[in-house]
Image (cartoon, rainbow, N blue to C red):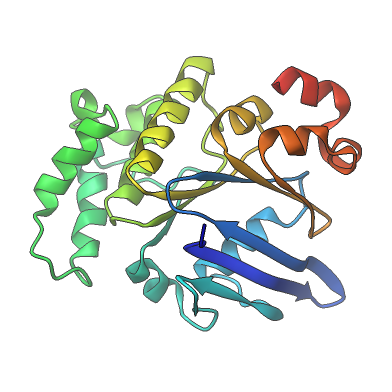
Amino acid sequence: MTPILETKDVVVRFGVLQAVSRASIEVIEGRVTGLIGPNGAGKTTCFNVITGLQEPTSGKVLFEGKDITGKNPYKRARLGIARTFQKLEVFGSLSARENILVAAEQRKTWDRSGFSPAAVCDEILEKTGLSDVSEFMVGTLPTGTARLVELARALASNPRVLLLDEPSSGLNEEETAEMATLLRTFVAEGLAVLLVEHDMSFVMGTCEYIHVLDFGTIIASGTPSEVQANSAVQAAYLGTETVEEAS
C-alpha cells in the first residue's frame, strides 16, 4: 500500500542534541498507525515536523508522494493534515457546538465546495455522540467528553490524515473503549490516523501497524504482535510483563 503521508530519514538537532535520528514513518489511509516510545524518545518532535511546527535538520516529509517539507502549518492543514494535542486544546467558555463551528468556519478559508459549516457541525456531533451535550460549555464537561470535542474539532477540517497525541489521556476504561471504537469507524471511511499513546492496551487493540521510537531512532516497525515479540522493544520500552498484559 502506498502511504498518504511519510517521513523519510528525518533528523532533528537542537544544538548538540539530536532529538530525532533518520526517522522514517509511513501512514496509510484506512489504518490506525501507532508511534510509541518512552518519554523523550522524540514522538512529539516527529509530530511537529509532520505538521510544520518544527523544521527538520535533514530529511523529508511527503504527502501523496510530494515533498511538503517547506510548507507552513496552514498549507499542510489545507492539504488535509489535522492534529490534536496531549493537553486539551479547546475553548472552555464556548459550547461543544461552537467549538466545532469555529473549526468548520476556518475550513471555509480554503474549501470552496460550498459546504454548510452548520451541517458539518451537526453531522460530526452525531458521529461523535456529542449531540446531547452540544450546548454545554466545554469547560463544564468531563475530561472524556472534552476529548471528544477536541477530536470533533479536528474532524471539522475534513482531514485526510489525523494526528492524535495521547487521545486516551484522562479517559476512564469505558471512555477509552469508546474512543477506540470511534477511530475504527473513521478509518473504515478512509481516514488515515497516526497516534502517539502510552496506554499499551489501547495501542495494541486499536493500531494495525506500529513504529517504535527510542532516543529518536525507529528501533522497530510492524504489526502489534510483531512489536510485542521484538526483543529490542521489550528491552527499550515495553518490558516483557507489559507486553504480556497488553496481549
